[in-house]
Image (cartoon, rainbow, N blue to C red; front, side):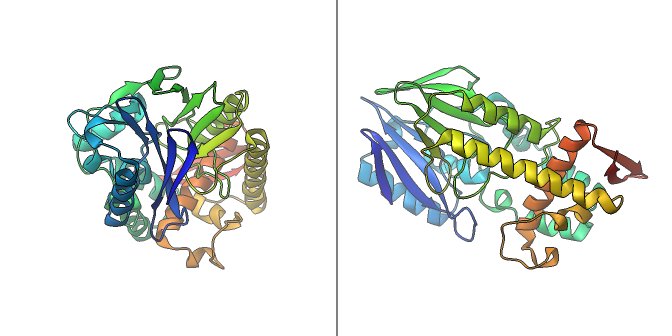
Length: 326
């Protein structure tokens, strides 16, 4: 499906089969002599077919097209490897560009996070199964891209659109949004979503991913925005109202973690079932393996935030980590 949002600004709905996200919103901007595509979808046939059909309908020439990638998740950049050409600029944040280069250089980032998850209570076999079913394993970027690095405050101009990069870390270490002040538009990637809340997971290279996310929410809340172009599902017409809802959501989740620890010391896997997840599973054991991975990471992000605030303490016994109230 293609939607014209403003003159020369379009949304292509890229299906994400078997994902609770349902689809990716890929945005296409027409300039005088070039095009800009923001985010791409998985590297899989269903995404490729929808993208190519949409680009053909819009008359987009990939030989005159640049890309902006909001963050490293495979549903946002996986298809980039088949779309980018030799004449393409791919705008990407430095932190996640370096992480992507490290992966193609052979660094086993998955094993490092797997070790952390197992130390925090995820059973070895279950963690490996969840990791292997992670979409990044199947549908992520398949080739190295030479990125054009952008930082907070950098400008990207395309046609009548004059974007400013806004660093919004939290959902990922280097997540970056785009702000168009004259048109009062925020291209938010997964920083702001409407029908669902962005997954805020634990990242080894972030001291406090949830804390960073909450700071980033306050940062965009100061902008004059009338329309938020989200990475998934419906668009947002009330930024401040949605920011308030997201803040309240995380406050409630932090309270759930504290309640879980109220009756004694636990590891992350033991805390996760106390959280109210919006998923069709009656018990933690019935969670799909892939969703267990996301839920575990989100639980850990909230626990680590509380630890940083001095409300929770951790104890490491021979490589096994548990948490308790201070």
